[in-house]
Structure formats: C-alpha cells, structure tokens
Length: 411
Image (cartoon, rainbow, N blue to C red; front, side, top):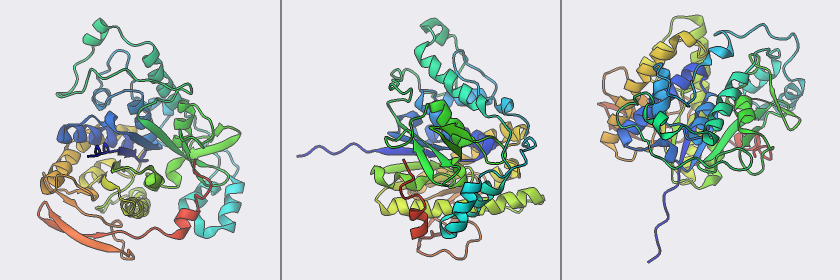
C-alpha cells in the first residue's frame, strides 16, 4: 500500500498597518491555543505588508509567544522588540511634490480593466518621505540572533512566556541568501512602475535580502519612499491585494490559514468620516479576498480565513497606523479570535470558510461571503449554522482581468 502524502499547509498573513500587526499577533496566539499547534510549523508562509514582518519573524524562528510578550512589554533577552515608534508618527510626513509613479499611471490608463482603484491612487499620490529602515533593522537583528544565540543559562532566565508556549525547536537554518530554508517564506510587494506583484523568496523573483523584501512590502505609497531592489522600485504589496492568496494556487497546498486584518466579513457603522472611508476600502478588500478564497478552493485547497469582527473594528477605528490603539487592538483580538475559532471548530473540526467574529460574547459565524453590503456577488453556496446565526455563503468568481493583471509579473 502506498504511503499517504503528508499534508501541506500554508499560512497567509495580510496587510493591515501597525494595528493589523497587533491584531494578527493576537489571532496567531488564539490559533495556537485553540488548535494546539505551533504556527511556525506551516510548510509555506506568505506575508504582505504588515504580515510580511510577522512572516519573516516566524520564518526566523520567533514564536507567537515571544510576540505576545513583546506586545505586553515583556522583552526577552536576544529576541526582537516589536516597537514601531521608530517609524514615525501616526500620520505621514509631508510628501514630495511630485507624482509617485508616472509610468504606473500610464499603465493603468492604457489597461484600466487590469488596474484597481488602489493602484491608480498609488500612482497619483505624491512621493512619500517616510523612512522604513526600522522594519529592515528588526528583521536584520532577528536574523543575527540565529548566528549568535543566547547561551543556555540566559535562555533559562528569559522572561516568563504564556502558558503552553512552544520551546525546544530545532535551530533555524538559513540559506546562502539569508532566507530561512524552512518554512518556505514568500513576501509580496508591488512593482511601482508596472503595477505587477512580485513574490520575493520565490525562484524567479529578483534577488533580494529578506530585510529589503520586507521593507518593500511595507512601503505604503505616499507615506514611505519606494524601496529599490535590482534597479526597480517596489511598494506595499497590499496596494494590489490585502493578502494575495491567489498566488498560492500553483503551490498544491492542502490547507491554508489566512489572517486578513484589512478585511471584515461583518460591518459596523463608525461615526467619523475617516473611519467611514476606511470601511469603504475594507469592503473592497474583502470582496477581493472572497474572490481569492474561491479561486484557491477551486484548486482543491481548504481555506480558513480569520478577519476582524465588529468589536475589533470598534477599537481599530479609522487609522490603522495609530500606535496609541495598539495594545487595545491586541488584547481584543486575543479574545475575539479565540471565540470565533472556538465556535467554528465546535461546528466543524476542519473549517473551510471565513470566520467572522460577532459582538455577542463567545459566538461567531462561519460562512463565505463577498463582503458586507455586496449585492453584486455571483456564485453562491449553502450556508452553515454557527453561533445561532445563519450565514449564506457568497463569493464572486475571479475574473480573467484579475488573472491577466499579474501574468508574467509574479515571481
């Protein structure tokens, strides 16, 4: 009898700013606690923007427990400190008075059906002046810890970690280019002249160091200066997609866990004008995620997507770069993400639909949707009952334009 092939699992960490990072760390710890796994054990980790930072740390051996401690101000010797204050204020500095990317604007004008409004906006925005070197330094310092680990006594005296923290793993092995050998690590950025996505870390992508790749993935257009790699300019991968889940179609993964802080399968009604604009962008991102989920599921991959619910959105507010809300977002995510997972796992031990946290304590709804308020969705599926609510699954099929836009541009 032939041996059964081991299951191949992927972890996708999406865009979401400094608050999205805090939310993902809370969600990662909830996943480890509820499913009794170590998220570093995934075969492939894909990160976009804020998610690329966490993906790099996981790939370099930093566990979710260490990140949780850092969020709570408990800094362990030899481990990175996730402190984003070096990135500047919660608002961007005054930009340069010149268009971000005239070539990208020309490309979007010539091929309007292949460009999203976010890509066109990125081209039009003035060039950012913000510096993102602190992100690269964080990744560099984390990699240096692998070559110069703590001695056993120092490790034993390190700060207390949350109950159940996974320790005693094998040392991380780095390839000659400085990227971890396992898990396979992929970082998404957008070419600022062509608008195509590039998957750094893949064999066909431009050669780049891990710190440079992560900085490129996080370079928000109009806020930070583009990052130059191999003579090309790159910006935030979240400009094209909140998670770039569709780039994993050819990976033949059995299961994929998606944490998408820029999306929400439930909506709220914020009062502030900025928050209302942010929710419009969030709805568009959610529709994109729903299409990508359906595309990956059509390829035979089981997808579990976890996004912020109404209670999370209330503390996130309208500015995902607002550092003053980071601690509250993190603590809220610990609770809401665990509740959503607990309810979904209670209904189905292997959830395959996006998980939506609800305001009611300890309840959640599992169901595929195209995003709040989307009445134009096609391809609907049966709903499943969880947490006392019925959710009709709806997801729009991916379009030919979505696939052609990246043809020949994805590494």
